[in-house]
Image (cartoon, rainbow, N blue to C red; front, top):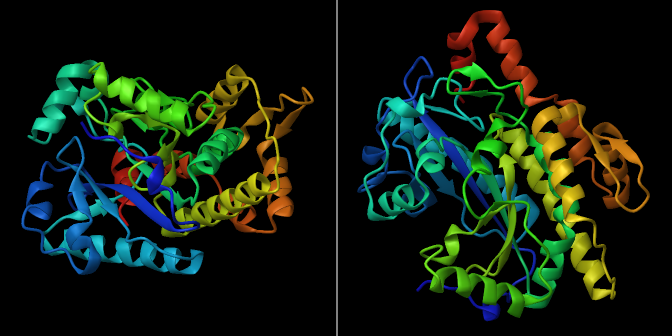
Length: 357
């Protein structure tokens, strides 16, 4: 029974990044081939021990080593991208990045053959069979378990902001969904996903984790896939709500904002801040607005009943935290809008090629 521990929260401010990528041919279409990229991996540098399969044979996950500061984390993110790109190309393939691959027809693509994924497919059935999603996950080290729970609770109102700015998946299974992040909605059809509820303390969360395993709801703590979670094995807070980003620059800006956001929450905890308790239903509504509208989202403020447009929230956060990362990201424009522009200019073939990095 794989469970975590409060004792693992013992380092502050470390950073780790996980990104999921699509392995494609020269035209940008998915190929069922990840096994040869991973088994006995000849991947360069730190990737050798930090590359793994995902559910489908055309999706791989790569992880950075732990970084002790923001600049180092940005550097290893770039190094990871460069190394995985060259590794894939050395095997005769290309790498594409998006929250969903627009030409991935899940009914025609192969699952990885492993006991873990076979068990998931048997347990979850249809929602997992169609799960061709790819995300960006960021880990932030926390040096106290109670602080980690408080920070995980308090960062939830900012998750819709991160989703809106990272929205990069308008197409799924060959058609335009009308959404900005179809990935978020498809992934949320799985159990133990989406916006998490508030936990009162670490004991409360560890009880939940143990209960889910002991009742055979999940096989191990790693199958709690909520948009943010205290990672009780790594001693981190893991933010999982974001679509995978086609441009490395976009991932780096999201990473920087998360670093400043969580550093600020840590300071608030140390200063004795009691925190906010927004209605869970409002958090979910704001997430839905990000899924549907992306860069055009307007969010509800539970405290004062007002609404704020994404552009104004971005400016407010930049001023509050003293970082321009969100403003720069916002000015790059919407990933989903860019995908639709590519489709309009040349159809699905042009769009698929545009996602190759």
